[in-house]
Image 1 (tube, one colour):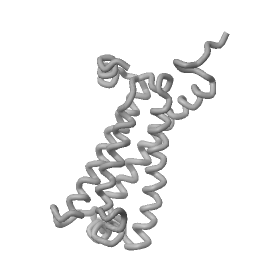
Image 2: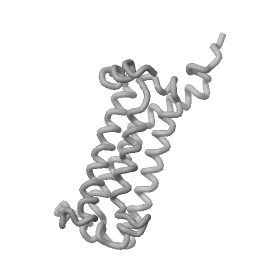
Image 3: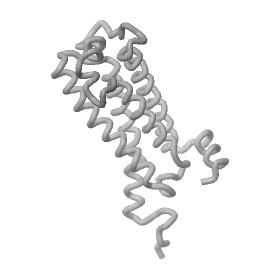
Amino acid sequence: MNPTQLSRELRTAQTPDLKRRRWIIGLSLVGAALGQIVTLYQTGIIKHLPDPPVGPFDSDKVDASDYGYKRLDTPDAAGMLITYGLTTALASAGGKDRSLMKPWLPLAMGAKILSDVVTNMTLAREEWKENKALCFYCQMANVVSVASLALAVPEVVRTVKNLQQGTGPNSVAQV
């Protein structure tokens, strides 16, 4: 796609898919911000993560525990920055008709977000099992991912239907 057209479509087009993609981008940036906050704590830049006064939350305990540092010799929240950045890139890639023109983009985005939801739920169970507490920021990121998945479904479903029907730029016209 020509960059001028892509710029115009992403900034000004008002299709239902683009509106949902913009929400996914915004939610992903919230997820990245949550990861930044916890990374600041896990690397000693800030000394405390405030939690809501209700619920099973003890973010300081969870994010300072072995659980928060046992993968890849790095604080786990740093990975949140990468994953939500990738989701942002996938949601922002392609123009308003990407479901037809580049169907791999919505499919990749949907698969990525589904993978995030499954991973986040698995990590939440592990977080609770190991700490008997939850990180509020991590659970808010789970909410971000679930909401993003719900927003991604319509475009993914339409893309699958288009592929099944053979519609798109490379399909043979039906007579």
